[in-house]
Length: 454
Ligand code: TYD
Ligand code: MG
Image 1: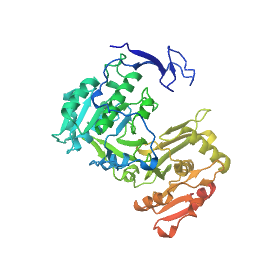
Image 2 (image 1 turned 60 degrees about the vertical axis):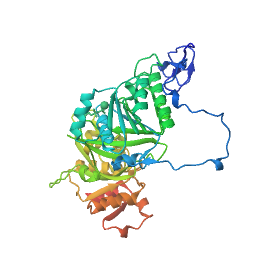
Image 3 (image 1 turned 135 degrees about the horizontal axis):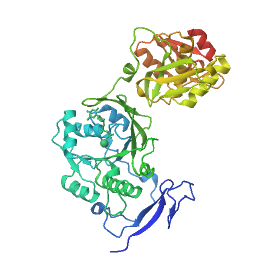
Image 4 (image 1 turned 90 degrees about the vertical axis):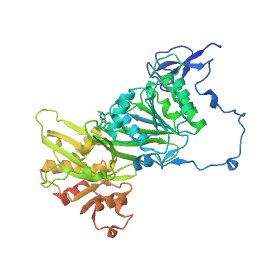
């Protein structure tokens, strides 16, 4: 047996060194060096499927044969959507999410729902009993669903060879361990090696593989960013643990668009698909309270109407407070500065709180106009009609800027029974407002909106 050779790699940028370094000379990050095996000197975990590769030969692009990629359409429309139209055969998908967000629940449920496929669910985190108890809560019966509680990849592949599953779900990649690498489970080189073994397996047997991975609080896929490059698709499962809504978002997809997302609701018996999210995210209220405005936003390719709540109160301390939930704090500060400068409102002596209903995090800048209107509504203590919604980005000069996919937003607002939508004047040029039942009000400046509403 030959000697195992190792080298040190920066886990951030991949810089290679023969010895350990505290600071990476390439990307200047500290403590990112990890030892990795470069010559294994042993059998690899999935050797028997290694193709007999002929040396690479250049080929004219025109002569390349394309086979339409085959997809498995699942029973879950949201999963199909985020994957770009179903699971591609032989694809490897990384599902990332914070601990406790519901990844295991969602993919156990997906696995159980695929009744015509032999599914193997490999768990390194929970016992068979725990998974069985969870499956009982989900109330789905499936005879083709197999469990394996094992962390060694070599043992897992032995089982896979016997069972020949048509879909493999690994929960989680951080618990796997390949005997080819000495370091413990969860280390960068382990994660990389295990993912590489599954990648080889997926490509060579044309079996789709889902790898579940934990991410750290700040959203990085724990340790290896490298993993993102190895897989075909990266899905992120996110949401606030204290709320029921969860979003499955595509971050990377070799087989489809990255603008897709699926919305789920965590219930007592599993994840429920939310097919019309807008209806739930708007609080149904009889009495009207100040400080609330509805925004017509886009999440991925879907229009989504959500409620923005603002509270503006007299500040008790010298430094006024600005607190946000689901919205960017700097963006709020910018909008307040615009209102001060262009509208003459005295927010400098007020505490300001902004909250996006439903625990969602919105990055679409078209929410600006609704935030401004919610702020003004609370400032003046005048409620806004619940029949009105807003879609517009606010610029530094107090101008309302155009937003994309305006027709889709208007159509969604109309579908939900809104009577009026405020959009940017620069948007209005491109389409015919007469086609809608809903009244489309075009505005170009913040003070114009103020005059129209209060
Ligand atoms: P889990 O799937 O274990 O999260 P992850 O794998 O991302 O760490 O889900 C954890 C939470 O989900 C747990 O707090 C209980 C809750 N849960 C429900 O609310 N309903 C259910 O049907 C199930 C199975 C779990
Ligand atoms: Mg889990």
